[in-house]
Length: 194
Ligand code: VGL
Ligand code: ZN
Image (tube, rainbow, N blue to C red; front, side, top):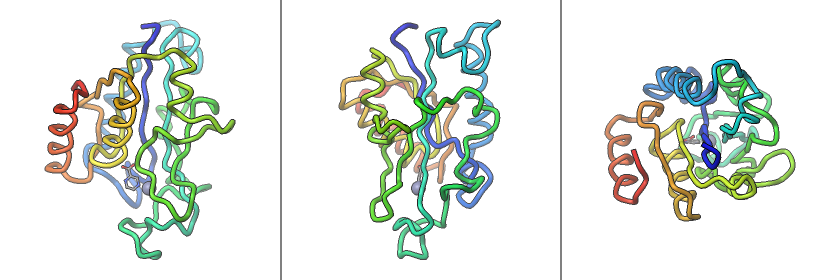
């Protein structure tokens, strides 16, 4: 347990019930809560679980209004996860488990798409990869939205950096079911454990 952590990718309202609502997203949040409950001791709750040895790190898509990935800017997606909006917020069931130093924002540069959470930054300017290293984490459980994009890219970068990856298969939201299955198959081949 000591060298394990959970990384929650983009469990944000725009991906759950907002402008980019993904399939299975609400169920993924519910299953993630079940997992968190199982991994944390009964009498501990909220931020205390981090002290109990099972840190939970959050990756959050967090775009300026004029981000290049938005359709109005010629990009691929409807506007989503705009800073300061509800759509950019962590689901309220998970929010109590988040803390600023373990919350990492990505996609802040208006000119750059950033699917991977690996280089996402916390309020102190440290990246997810850096903080996992500092915490001596070896095993990383991953859940989140969307399987095909941010989850896959985050898992692949963490794997390349030498972490052992466990993807929580029931705790994923996705853009399309076929894309989800394809991404799972690809990650399986790469040694990411499902
Ligand atoms: C994502 C598309 C655009 C994701 C983020 O979290 O998978 N997908 N921005
Ligand atoms: Zn985005």
